[in-house]
Image (spheres, rainbow, N blue to C red):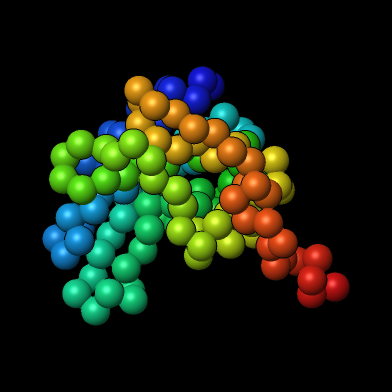
Length: 134
């Protein structure tokens, strides 16, 4: 799957965002090694801390359906209806991604017209993971 195709799926997922407090809408599309794509959007809560990011929504959906290995994730976000130029996963989402993905996971950020790609280990150096608990 091309980066832009995965980004377009994330743009569609963004439309389901529930973000009445920040108005910052985020969509994610996670590509499993199986070839299946899992989408997610951010879901806010009036108490703020129970809010769930789009990336974690996609990961949790995939894991709950039995997928445990991933090759890429596209993330798109921004205020209102139009995606911003750049939206990167937050620190918590990076940590969750590192639980299931090696450092080579492709993280596709931006919007369909302006895409930036990085590896997970580039955006989460010195991650804490299973290796630290052995």
